[in-house]
Image (cartoon, rainbow, N blue to C red; front, side, top):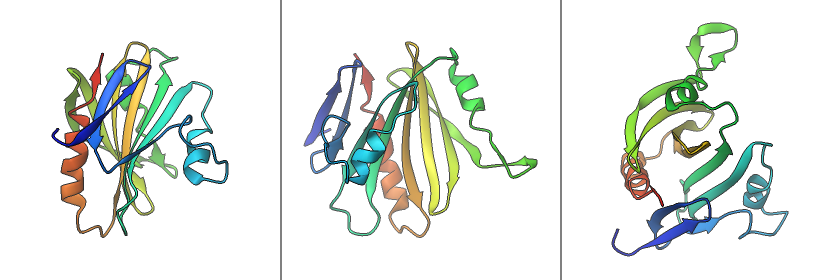
Length: 165
């Protein structure tokens, strides 16, 4: 995209983000009192990293896209990874915290998208399985955000630039 910067990761991928956005990763934020640092440095055993792409200039509804990268220890396919999102709410198996929100292609691979209930709205999670790793992109679609549709388009635009190298 014109006037966007390219982030390259040692795990073999690139993604483009708007120039005004910042990139936070475990090695770019070293203040333990910073909530972003705490989030990035509390990894589960199979997680390889969390990268957060953020526009901190947005005054009310923060713009951020997080990428969680995990080792695919259960050798999940895209479909079996997607099935793991069906979490019953309370004890009723007919209710679910997650609902399918479509499929798309990222870097030529099938990706699954879900809306996951959050108290402030919905987390939109998009996942791909590639070379024994699971890549989960997420962003919060906040209830009452008047710009949610344009933000959704921006996130899809960013995801369209993700490529494995």
